[in-house]
Image (tube, rainbow over all chains, first blue to last red; front, side, top):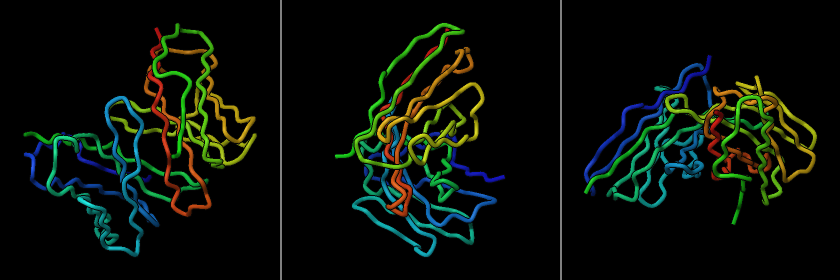
Amino acid sequence: SQKIEQNSEALNIQEGKTATLTCNYTNYSPAYLQWYRQDPGRGPVFLLLIRENEKEKRKERLKVTFDTTLKQSLFHITASQPADSATYLCALGPGGGNKLTFGTGTQLKVEL
Amino acid sequence: DVKVTQSSRYLVKRTGEKVFLECVQDMDHENMFWYRQDPGLGLRLIYFSYDVKMKEKGDIPEGYSVSREKKERFSLILESASTNQTSMYLCASSSPSGLTDTQYFGPGTRLTVL
């Protein structure tokens, strides 16, 4: 069955450093991968999408890589700030009926 | 600005009660989804709908039903609430024409069943 793995342990980093989050998947051949941010008590918010034929995508301080051979995506936040503290979810698609399959998320804490 | 709203942020119900969770989107999206989110289990799809009056089971439909009478509104129904349905419920919508299935989420309803 399809499986998406994100590090369940919280990632604690110091302000100004680069945060790197990992999303691994098995038994899946996604056409694209998405990253969402979720704050406590809120719904996820879309951040970035990367397609299977793209190696890297950037948006301001965010960078996503996608390696379909390793079946892995890395999500980087450069010059991290305390305001970046949140849970980050990866999602793979497409699924039938335009569904996405979500990972469980990794909590990021950026400390002063 | 896109918007998905849910009828309640917090809800407390008793075991056996019938519970209605309402979701409304103003983006004219065809697709709508209901998830529940529990610690360590992530987002699990309960039901989704790709058109008015159409519905499809997700991964965990047992104990739930849905209704979509209008394009902008998707309701989740707990026929007889049980304590194991205590959870955060999230509604989302997307447009198939976007070719990316980006989903827009509501703020969530935290349901407690006593």
